[in-house]
Image (cartoon, rainbow, N blue to C red; front, side):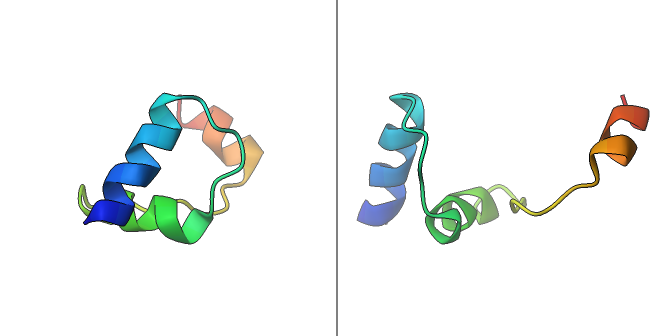
Length: 46
């Protein structure tokens, strides 16, 4: 849990290089994950 709080603080502070594994640990608490998305399809979904 401490790692999750540290990652959240780093995100809030605007840190640009975070471990995707750590980010996914936090996002999984909300039912989400980071992953590759085709840029063309992402634009169509808006």
